[in-house]
View 1 (cartoon, rainbow, N blue to C red):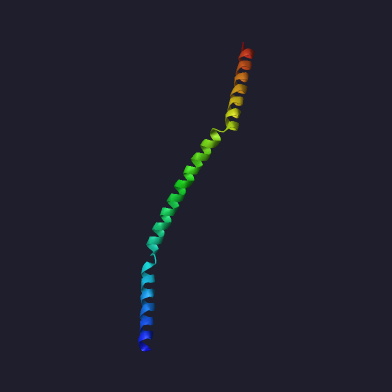
View 2: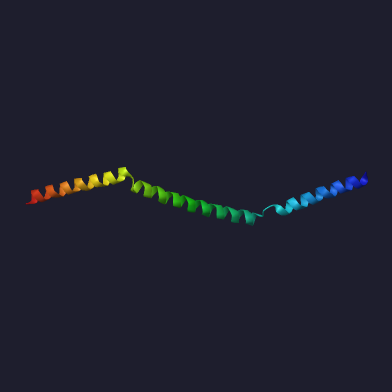
Length: 84
């Protein structure tokens, strides 16, 4: 009976020892956090660039830009007519 108890205690001690070795240190946690933050910022920047490009080339943006250019040309011609 004592042998079984001693083996059980040794197994528990071994499990506790191996779990203690697997825990991350504070330095490792900060390093991991820094890597996650840099990865997240890169992902955010990529998504922002893609979204900006999609908006810039959307049909609404293109049609609005052409309409504004037409209106500006009309104003220019009217000012030229007035100044002559």
